[in-house]
Image 1 (tube, rainbow, N blue to C red):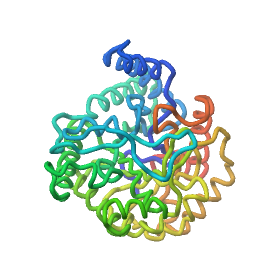
Image 2: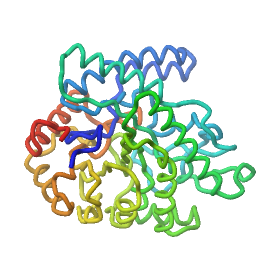
Image 3: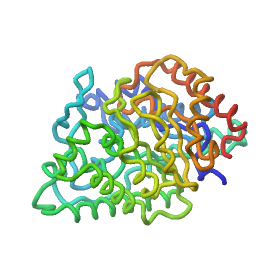
Length: 385
C-alpha cells in the first residue's frame, strides 16, 4: 500500500530554528521600530533559504520552517474572528524558564473572514518549485502547511475563556470552529495545497495524569469524554476536505527551549485516536520514556500511517543510529503491516516557538541528514514509497 500523498519515510513536524535577522526584526516590530511589511520581507528572504536547505539535506516534505510565527498556534488562531490573546494559561506544568503559554479567549462569534495560510503556502510552493528547477532534482517534494488543531481554540481555557453572550452553550462554538477550518481547508485546496498537518497538544496532554485531571475539572467532563469531544471536533473540521488532500496530526507534549510539559503513554487515548480520528497520518512523539511504550500502536488500522518520532529535536547530540533502527523494528511489531506503516522523524519541530531548542543550526541539519540516512537504510532510497 503506497504512502499517503505528501508523506515520506524521512519526515518532519515542520519548524526550524529561527534566523537571528527574523528575531531582531520581530522585536523591532513589537517596539514600533519596524513595520509588519519590513518583517515579511525578512521572512521571505530566509524562508527561501530554509526551503532550499530542507531539500538539500534530503527532506521531501517542505515547510516555511514556521518562520512567520512566534508560537506554533497563536499566530494562526488570532486571525479567526472572535479570538483574542489575553494573559497566560494557568497550569501546574510550567517550564524551568518560568514560561506558561499565552491564553486564548473567545470574545465573540467565531468566524473565518479571510484565508489565513494561503499567501504563506503560495510563497513556499513557489520557492520549492524554483529549487527543483534550478537543481534539476527529479525526486518528489511536497509543500506542507502546518496549522494548530481545532481543539487549540478552546481546550486550555475552558468555559471561562468563552464569552457566555456569544455562546451560552458550547455546541454552537464547536460548529463554528468546524466551519472556520472547513473554509481554511477549502482555501488551501483551491491554492493547490494537498497536505495539511494539524498540531495538537490537548490529546497528548490527556495522557498526562495531572494535566488530564486539570482538564476534567476545567471542562466538567471525564478524560474519556474529553478525548471523544476532541476527536469529534477535529473530524467535523476536516469532514469536507477533498479526497486527494492528506490530513495529518501531530500530538505534542510541549516543546519550549528543549523542555517538555507533559508525560505519559498514549494508552488513555489510543483506541479513540487511531480508530475514531479520520486523519491519514499521525506524527507521534516517542523520543524517550515519558511517551510510554509502543503497545498503543496495536490499535492502528491497516490503512493509516504513523510517523514515529523516535529521534530527538530537544538535544544537540546525534541520536544513535543502531538504537533508532532497533526502536523502529520494535514499534513495527505492533502495527498490522509492520514497517510498511511507519515513517521516521524527530519527536517535534526544532522551534515550536521563536526561541527554539538548545542546539545550533549546524547541529539541526546534521540531525536531519542522519534521519534521512537511517530512513534509506530501513526502507530504501525512494522515501516516497
